[in-house]
Image (cartoon, rainbow, N blue to C red; front, side):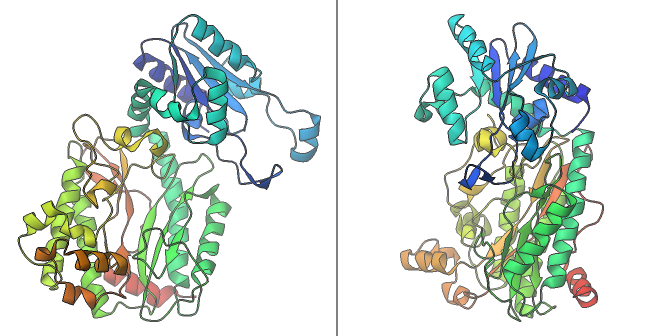
Length: 466
């Protein structure tokens, strides 16, 4: 949690961007696993955290733009809860900690909203992503769940995106803390990457590190020998010599700022020549993006340059052919790279994704594409100083996609399917780091960098295996 002044300034900046009305931001409730008293670990809504700081369930925040008043609403816990969970701050104390004088019971929310509606005032609210919030909004405002995304406030979404996109120094420090935990997670995974160890064991070990040094993993860890599966969650598969292990994982701090890194590790300790050839292309793409990232650069352009480099590299290996620019414009490279170069990151690992990617990663200058592969680019807008984005190129050999394109003749003029067939069991390679956009360019976040250059990876594995 930051200082009281930080939250006061954030709320003031948000109100200043909207002309009139009231702003409603709901905090999250507990999420039951298989019964009302067995819940998933509580995670507060990120926008609520950003403006109100309180991590308890059952809260709502209201900002009255016209009267310049802020409210924090929720019910204090009673002795029955205290017996089981211990004492917690009162709602009034939570409000005081973030500079809010006007606090009250959760039921007062209905009074505030009813008064606003009767006065014809605009109620700005965010598109809900939880069913309990959908039902609550239906009850309080009258919009059915099917209408709420459409009726949510675009002005509020854009105002929050503008504020949360540029990270303050104190936010960068929190992300650096998350990166420090991520370093421990990934170097542990690399040390454990040996024949016979299970994917699930490695995932469990790094999840424990995230919880030991922070709050939780920033997303369910991807730990798999099937790196060609974008979200290859770990199973009981034993690691096999000669194959690659892809580990995409990150941590959240206690203040809920995230890290997100990916490493692809040779299970035998050394890359085969075939693996080196593909890995080196991905490595070059990562460093190309790192060198190109700076304020004013369109991230879409960096993504497209990475795609061109992939095509050139795969042409050298005999897997692609034809004119590079024509191949990229046709989307032929998406057989090997079906996702985007990166995304915004902060309090959410895909920062502000719940607000709509067209507002977060795109803007009036550039909007998402519908082309396969390019449609999965989460970030295309111009970079600004203070942005935190991921740099995560990859090359994958997806048997089902190869079969489909070969059968349908998709981009056949650019693809050597007979040569590609020899890579069916290759898997996939991704390298990912978190970048801070600075005045001069970009730097990788985290004091200690997880090895990713070929010689560094092999040297680390030779010296650090358990």
